[in-house]
Length: 270
Image (tube, rainbow, N blue to C red):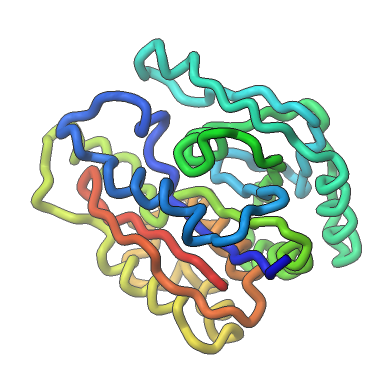
């Protein structure tokens, strides 16, 4: 089995890929990117470990539920979006391997045997792997959102890639909701927020020296436009875990989309 890449994906807005939007093509580019993930990954993963911007705990917490339900943790969307299904199973053995790797790296962990999949997990995976036939395990972020800690978390998880596990960060490279909502309500497609930060972030992620990359990402908040793009950084931090898990692999940008008045990007390592 080959070493799995690591990926960061933008997961859109709520159940965006499964409802009508105006204009109708709003999410087409991101949906196409997700549908292309299996080919970009290559070999079928043994399991997928997801870090979503929608789960934070005081201590890194591993989902050990063998058959997670869905958490419809969005509001105000059409009724049918609360009836979506994604019956992927968990994998307690791999979950315990995650615990082992984190604890070996002196990262305290908890386990949650009841946790379901939040929409940062099941919405993009329903597009990328619609058969739901690959086990999925979720790992929380730590609520302090410390950049160095989450890069170290990714480094601890690096061996999973040699064991057939795809490590996926699910969030957004731009997540200023007030700007996004204003652009949507005004139907303003001419302005694109976040371009300055996206350019900096792309340079950081794709830096050919992994140590420089990680140092840059650990100081992301000082980048041009950073705090405007992320008034709170929970949707960016999954990318830092993925970068830590990348080891010496160089990142490359796999998507740049302009949607709801902002730029959203995806990245892959390996």
